[in-house]
Length: 283
View 1 (cartoon, helix red, strand yellow):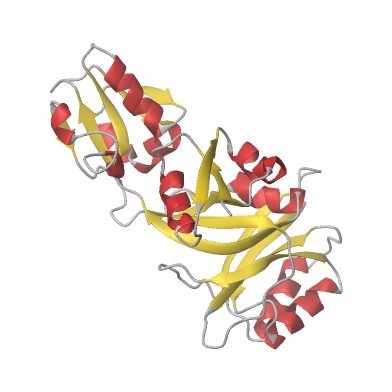
View 2 (view 1 turned 135 degrees about the vertical axis):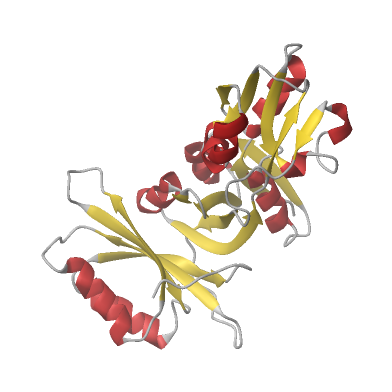
């Protein structure tokens, strides 16, 4: 049976790299690309078995549309993977008059672009930036993912100049998650380190709300890994909380902490999954 994996397109993106990473888990798989994160998440309605989306970048932070989707529809995180983010600038002329770059990539390479870039033309994707460069005869450049060169879509020798690794942060990474429709949790395996995620829904706001949540985790010795507030979209001052922490949702100390929180607020449990290769604690 072929597993249908949906991810953000077009082909050649970091999302495709992550999707291919997850695809190795299945005997047969088919990767389908969608034009936006919203459409990607909703691909479960189109028959996708798994969706692969970015959830956090070291430089840009949390990917808000993905976190917001956890409140909008029942989803379950089943795995995560961390993908290194490296960018290069390719030129068809030593002195380009313009540079094509995707809007998020510009933020991750702002230092180099500020010092060296001519007029910047913003594109919808990294692969579009490359395509525009290949289609023009004017002196131009493009900011593209490093993995598109040589072993990827194009040979570096086809360009007049290539500047490698122009990313602001040398260890820049993006964390991706694989999602499926919500299902009963599998029992935790002995000897496996897990992390879990929940959303605490703001439907009972009161003074000290966040402190109560933090104390519940602290009392039951559950170590937090990330905590992000997201506006509910109802009115100013109302927020949902996306929280990741060590342990499996079926572990006794985790259940005890969440039970205390559920006395006052609704909790959406998003799943338990193994650590990716790069993680850091926030508490």
